[in-house]
Length: 108
Image (tube, rainbow, N blue to C red; front, side, top):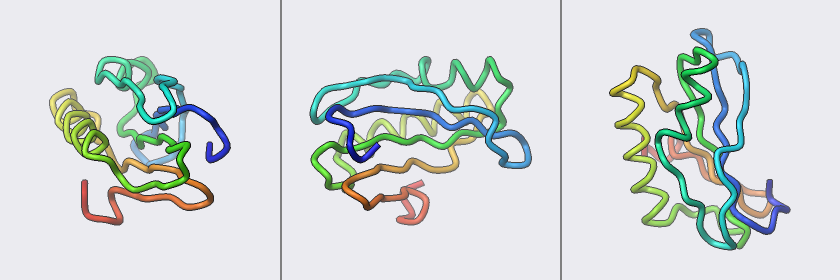
């Protein structure tokens, strides 16, 4: 994902044993933004009976530092996941051969 020229937002679907059962493209955005709606993130998780998800998107700039918008949408998605019973385990932002894990940074 580090070579993509637009932001791509994907969701990795996991079962109750944290094994990957699927991955779906949620949206393709612009050079520096991606429009993400909780409905679109959790739709494949509900369809495939996922127990939890990992959110992944890239920053074409190469800098994986979370933007204020990244922090805000992650909070919204975590809350939506709590409501429907599908836990957000992490949100990973991929940059130029580097990444940031919200879980590692204590942001989730």
